[in-house]
Amino acid sequence: MKETRKLKSSKGRYTGLVHVHSRYSHDGKLSTEELKRMAVADGHSFILISDHCEDLDLRRCGELIGECEKQSDAGFVMVAGIEFHNQGIAVFGLERAAPGQEDPTRALEESLTGRTFNVLVHPRGRKSEIVDAMMRRMHAVEIWNVKADGGRFPSARRIRLWRGWREKYGLKAIFGTDFHGMKERTGVHVEVELDVLSREGLMEALRAGEYRMYNREKEWDPENMSPKEMWAVKGYGLFRGVAIGAYRRAKVLMPAGLRRRGKKMVDGEGP
Ligand SMILES: [Zn+2]
Ligand SMILES: [Zn+2]
Image (tube, rainbow, N blue to C red; front, side):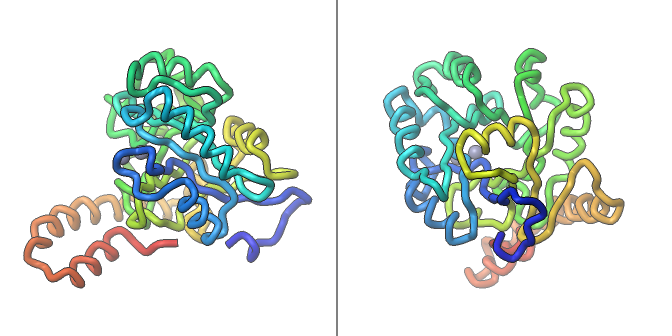
């Protein structure tokens, strides 16, 4: 994917996926090795893993960190992370194992003591706002969650929520996949510019908000969306709300082929 774009500076452009579940999550379908293979095939250079805290006891969390190191080399970076469902927070860049399963509250505190990239994932409403002190430790809000929002447009509702929090907490927007399996294979990705690809450089760029967001070749800049883009996003949000309800009611009667086509129409194609 990135070979076709021209380099603007001497820095290299590296693309990757944010908010990815591996088999360390009970509902994750791919191993870290398979995830890397998929990402590389799609032209990417990094993956930010966020496995569910309830599936990561201290031992498995340590294993996940080791696995991510094992999958990382000069051409690829896999970053270990953990998702706290109750708080709707994903912490990327774990350096030490945290007791996610045994004591999620402590695990969250401990995770945040490192140089991590902290994202409010799939916010649903005002209730998604966590305590003020915690909000101040976040870096970004996931305004596109491919699993929940489909592969066509970011979520109008989450953009609205993010804009409120941007004013108050200075949070950036980010695109996440919430990848669990091939259904969420997507063109939605994030790009950073680095002198050389490294975990440290990647984490620094993310923490500083120095990244761009794309769906396939199309760049989205949530800070400067055109009226046309905003209308498309809002219109799609309305369409999706109606279409999903109708689709859920009709799908029991549909043959499998039609079911797949219907889903593709609502959610969009892969990468
Ligand atoms: Zn899950
Ligand atoms: Zn998730």
